[in-house]
Amino acid sequence: MCGIVGYIGNKSASDIILAGLKALEYRGYDSAGIALLDKQAHGHLLKQVGRVDGLALLLQESQLPLASIAIGHTRWATHGKPSILNAHPHANQEQTIFVVHNGIIENYVELSEGLQKHGYSFVSDTDTEVIPHLIDFYYRELHDFEKAFEKALGDLSGAYAIAAINAYEPEKLFVARLSSPLVLGEGKDEYIVASDPTAIMAHTKQVIFLQDNEVAVITPKGYALRDLKARQKVLRQAERLDYDIDQIALGTFPHFMLKEIFEAPQTIRLASAGRTNIDTHSVKLGGLEGVAEQLQHIDRIVIVACGTASYAGMIGEYLIEELAGIPVEVQIGSEFKYRKEPFSRGTALIAVSQSGETADTIAAVKKAQQYGALCLGVVNAVGSTVARMTDAGVYCHAGTEQAVASTKAFIAQVVVLLQIGLMLGRGKSPLYNDLLREIEALPDKAETVLKLASSIKKLAGKYKNYKDFLFIGRRYAYPTALEGTLKLKECALIHAEGYAAGEMKHGPLSLIDESFPTFALAGDGPMYAKTCANIEEIKTRGGPVIVIATEGNRTIKKVVDDVIYIPKTLEQTEPILMAIVMQLFAYYMAIGKGFNVDRPRNLAKSVTVE
Ligand code: M6R
Image (tube, rainbow, N blue to C red; front, side):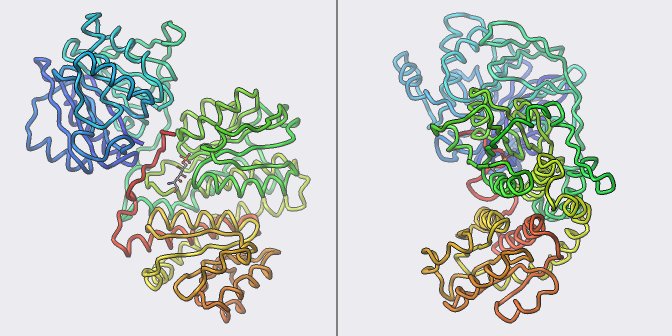
């Protein structure tokens, strides 16, 4: 949700900012901008509506002077529509102070009213614009940029990651963080600050993660960190981040979404490598060993997540309850934070998040921490906020996910939650060994599903003009169906409803006619016959039906319009194979409509605002 990059050092700052913005574009892509200071400390500002490539062209045409300090921003609009005036960086009237911001300043109306009384005028509809004016206001009083910056931060409420440059102290880059991610990369006589490491890794792997309430003043030779709340210096050395830069390259794939769907087999392998072993009948989750004793005393689990991660969480709910006998409840982050619910010490929270930066999920963890609850993370992005703030956790190891639609991370989340269920069940479940065996068999089965890509493409061609879809399933296939709807909505911009198949007769069946196709998830499990009955009810009312069934099921073919066969697996692991089918379907539907599948309209990858 908005990408920030800042640079100070001995290279061309604008080149580094542009490359960084390109890497962060998945966080927001409705407008982009850059501000730099030339050798005479004059500020130059360029902004435009649209993608970073457009900004690069503009920069080329404008022939701005070389600079060794600059900040840049790629935006996902919250306050004010995408426009040049609303794009970041924002500046004070004299254009001597430039700011980029990710987050939301909740008290911006009061602040701007106060500033207007002092003669400040505003040109944008954004909340961010108050920041450079506020710094300007305090700078006039204090004549010290660092003090003015800190004083301005003290007035802000909400969430922010901020980078600022100014003409008064042009050899310093100022940054701050409160509830929005910010990471500092340390090179030789240079620093790059960014919303996440993807913008930094091409230059250095030595990074310093800023924590809430911290401010850093950065020069090419070093940085000084301060905790504003504790009013003290912070000493934190750079740490080395393991990161494979190749992961963020497209390779031979036309889109990141397709590349990431095709990484499913490897994702399953990486999520289970060294963790589950059928030969030794063991599940070993190193990240949870430190809290093993506490885990023995929990009597309830709340899984908190958003979007796709919440559907993986729902599958986790079924898995943990069945395999470990512990009651589990899934709540979406944005609701959890504001609910008034009893939360006993025996309840553990599991936050599931690909990015580890989702504001609603972070808020949920903070709330559970106030209850004194054990907080665990199932996180993909190494070193992210959720990973750092939870007591313990299990990384998904899916690698960087670039496409806005989450695909391989969902697969990894389900695998990890399955492993957590097996571990918490301590071998008691009759399914224990079968599932351990199946985890090892799954990568090959995922390969088999991927071979169906061309037939799924044809199917998408057949259904591409339908405007509404229904997705149904029972038990494990129910949250899987919900995930199918989300993929279709966000990628192909098609209305889709997800229902527990048994719930159709309680209302939604009235929607069904020949214009409303159903995607039915009818795997091999104990719910197969009941799901078939629901399929019949839909067919009887003229609704076209596409079914995901297991290989060898010849009867279903006679009843429905289209069948996609996945390899036989256990009911508990069917969601993984079914998800791949639905991801491919959504991908080809989006491509068929000519949409930008990696960057769907109105969305961003990392949702760092509430
Ligand atoms: O990074 P997270 O897993 O916390 O993100 C949660 C959701 O924002 C995310 O899954 C979103 O729903 C995706 N666009 C779904 O494809």
